[in-house]
Length: 267
Image 1 (cartoon, rainbow, N blue to C red):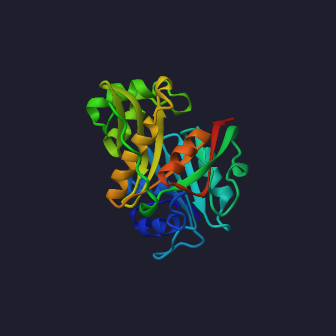
Image 2 (image 1 turned 90 degrees about the horizontal axis):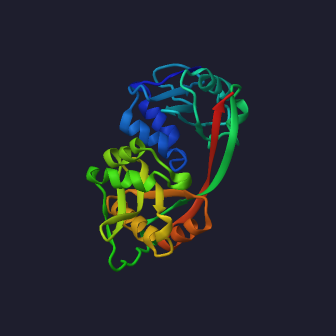
Image 3 (image 1 turned 120 degrees about the horizontal axis):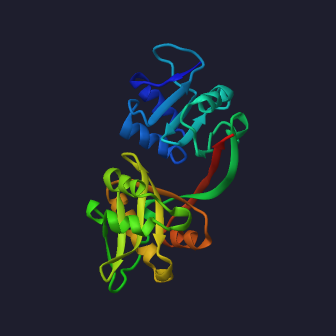
């Protein structure tokens, strides 16, 4: 049985998603921050049986035009796919780490797949953290809304990490962004895409091309990690270039799995 989730399902949903917290960090963060009442963030659950104590065996989440799914092997994957297929808001990206099966994509009927990426998923423990050394003439600090224009310009042509102004504003308001500046100008940044009370997903680690090779990504990511760990929040991230992986390993991150994403369009 598949239905929309509500407040009474909160504990059971958290228990299921906490079986693999790193893979489900976005869903856990959405649940903690937005609950079940936001029109841009919806949750559905698949139940083997209904009742006061029933818990979902799979969860499907839509956040704007991005979708995530996770569940046990015997979940009704076809039924969950039908929810996504028939939803009026067409998806453009799927976090394809469903847990109980290898991929959710074969169950979708109304979507074509443009690209699938598999990236290394890493975590950082407090005891492994090796903070980066400070750089001369470089200011590293947490960004505020006053930095929105500069950050929007930084990410406007950031290759595969390009973000709209609204996508830059969201972490400034709801999670956190750290920036590295030289001569008062924004040169690099790192942010958290999702957070819970104990976990955070780092993303958007970007340095302007003319300023690469100077350690800016390492110092800004180090400062962000130091703040998170100081608050008892464990950082996670995934990466797709050898240079990025080298930076994260220097800071003490270690591999914990694979992060699979699919760029999709309604066919």
